Image (cartoon, rainbow, N blue to C red):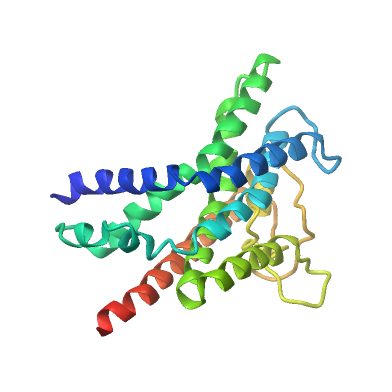
Length: 260
């Protein structure tokens, strides 16, 4: 199997594995609908019937959707062996990084789908009221605001799953997400909120969609400035952090097998 052919097939396999997790959808679908409703009616939203509203909906999904995923992905780095496809994957001439990328992409495409679909529906509604750019704006908001949050949740949860007992990892994952999202620079505890590392896209929303940040900006080089360049740096930093967490989780899960 060549890398060119193998990668799409492997990604599809892991996409189907996630798709068939019924318990995941029992939690994810209600949270997605709640986040969309909250984004539409919250007094904190811009209510501009444009890109700002769509970005705010993407933010509410970035807050709440990962809660469903934190508990579901603690076994991300081990489920391929548990399901009996680990040896099959290892027998292909595909490198370990490509295998990891296929697993991640397949899962991510399924996890981001509910948010993208609901945001697209919101975009269609705006289009019917005369905003012809609404659907592309909705898709852009979903991919740049909700997308990194979902990837971060996947990466953090999967890392916790290989360094902690599974039950503890699931509880710790949910608590960690609440700490990341709902902590504030105004409290005397470390937090990424108010910086470009914020996981709900404050910098991206401000720089690319004209949306006021949820958290007050902190000073220093990591401050949210509301410029397009600052948004780009924030997006790159979030993706880099998520990839680093995913790679660290993969390395930790591989160590026991290597030792044996």
